[in-house]
Amino acid sequence: MAAIAWRIWIWVFWVLSVSVALVSLRFMPLGVAESMTFMLHHALEREVAFYAHVTLAPLALLLSPFQFSARLRSARPGLHRWMGRFYVVSILLSGLAGLKLALNSDAGPVAAWGFGLLAVIWIGVTAYAVALAMRGEIAHHRLWMIRSAALTWAAVTLRLELPILTAMLGFETGYPLVAWTCWVPNLLIAEWLVRRRAMPAAQVA
Image (cartoon, rainbow, N blue to C red; front, side):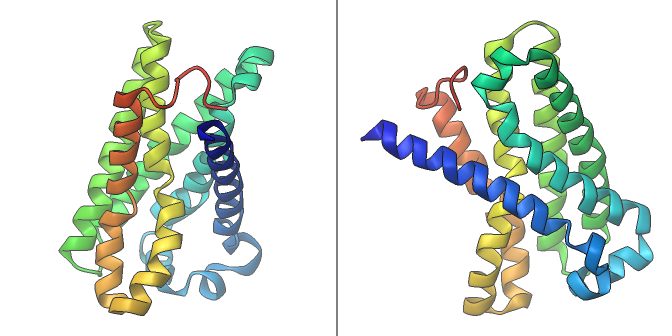
């Protein structure tokens, strides 16, 4: 039963990661004004940071499930490493850009701190995972990549939670709240999984 539930979760992880990543790139064919009206001021005032974040964060999300595929790691280790490099660079650049956007947020200090801390911790956790891999500590590297993926998945949980919070509390209250709820529970769940060894690091997919 547990194995079936785990397989269902893996399927959900893949489907939501890929679909949200692709939907997040809708501004490319549609334009920012039509697809991301609430972010238009960032596009106009902080163009480089805005486009770096909204382009590279979805790329990191898209690559995330592939990095946990045991089949890909064993069959194409070189491809796994190169995809990992793209994942890390995407997080570094989009995280720095996200931090700049958070510091200039007009949604208030609660939202600014929530998204700002997400950016800093996202970069830090991923950088530490890379350092572990470079030292050859692969088992620990995989555990820290679980934490990194949980933070990357904030893009998914934000889109799932924001409509609910907005409907219940209004956008002015829901948006600052989602700046925290989109990533803190993710990280706590990842930490629980890592510590309980509920998800073997070598067999995530």
